[in-house]
Length: 323
Ligand SMILES: Nc1ncnc2c1ncn2[C@@H]1O[C@H](COP(=O)(O)OP(=O)(O)OP(=O)(O)O)[C@@H](O)[C@H]1O
Image (cartoon, rainbow, N blue to C red; front, side, top):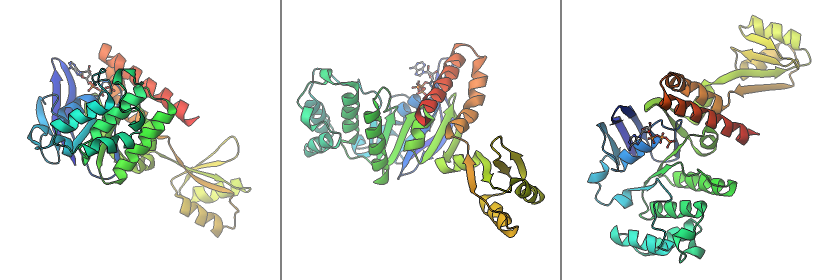
């Protein structure tokens, strides 16, 4: 369980995290989503005792990180895959962590196998690709078999195989009942990985929701096709719907759900070839939700330009992913 309570972090004049409150429960994957500079890494660093909050607190299993008796047994994290001594082998790196954290040495072999590095365990890390380093960082996070896991942008820079591997691993860790928080600035990635979303913009909470609720909230009516479209349009309009005729003669219906549309068509003996609820893409929902912070930031100088550019990046990412 992760509890972030009224957490604030200032760096001089910059408010990196601004009165942020949310909880992450065990089971499933929670995406921690926001444009670059939104405060995700800073929040994670505070949860891990690597940065001191200006005010508020971040708790893991009800305690501040510094108060955890055996931190690696409670929380594992991947923040920076390159933060490993290049001269050491993967095996030595993990053994060293195990020895200094009261973790049975047998776990080293287990996690090396789990992340697919058993075959290169004795190779020096400086020869590792980014993907291999990410795997090693994940092995270190899993070493103490913790119930809480934090991953900061784990798919950044990975090839499609690596991205898929991490996605599946995160989902399986969540399915085992662990608390998994994974940050990203790409909704397209979180859409495939997370069940819940905590969305932040400029350090503030923008949304704390399930993926399904978000899709529901941004539903865009129902597409209906019928060979007697004009008749059906009149029926639906009389029942209180707003109906727009699309260029291909489909009806775009809002104000009635799929069941009611089907019932009305049946009651009037009108054949229907298609009734499809339309969801806005989650990327659209995300862009809408973060638009305020981006717009607000756009006039505010260099920080704003950064946030705006990040939002644009994430849109491009989705376009690629949905093609
Ligand atoms: N050590 C620091 N000193 C000064 N400013 C910092 C420091 N760490 C973060 N910041 C600032 O705090 C804000 C939030 O940064 P943070 O890295 O937490 O965002 P993020 O959402 O993780 O972004 P990204 O996706 O780029 O990693 C940014 O404006 C950043 O420049």
